[in-house]
Length: 302
Image (tube, rainbow, N blue to C red):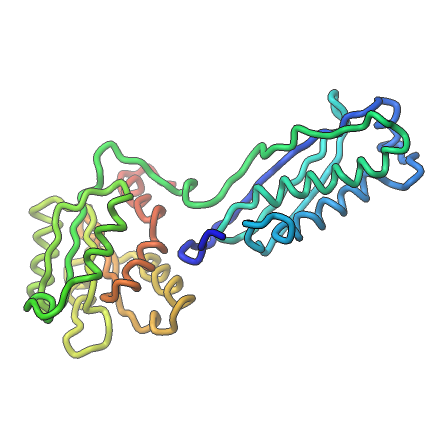
């Protein structure tokens, strides 16, 4: 199976369809409700819903998805009977396979109920016709990559006593995003120095996005949030709320991070935790939706 633990929940939707083919006079009996075995439409609907709910038991690499809604319907069509299924869930992976499984389950049951009446009965053309949700729905493109800086806050790393790991993790993650890292620096845990560097990056050097890592805890030298707040024009609380929520689902220590985020002019500054694991999980929580802030600042809205 694919590891989906780094992903965040989004509203997922899929619609699929398939067709039942047979003699027109037999297919009409489905809607006339004169089939000897019973109400084909209702049985097929119930079977399709049940199939979607048990999809992961049949499809080897399918994750068990907590479905919020499944609907299956049958309608007359020039090709025969069209079976449609709609599936909705708030989860980490898409629900296309669940929708296809629902259609297939409905078709199999309809076939079983009608086969005594039509020896040439068949079904096919099962496909996904629409899907929504997931990271691709929240991605923004930019003609020029977002100019980005990484600041590592650590006395010991600045003194050369410890290797930087979190900054490298951030840089590696950003390599696959529409940003360009133009600054990578290590600073000591000095409030005035941190604030001064943030101001210069935003005001004089034209950086649009600055990630800091380290100094967000409760140690005596952890001053990154305080330094950041002195330079921000506006805070963006939802960013750090998303980071802490995502992290808290993985470790209780995430609630102890005091990171801040906000804007100085047109530059977005975000404090990430100092641990490499915490920094990576924070980025996974933020991208790709984070970059939507730039068209918003241009007045393009949502």
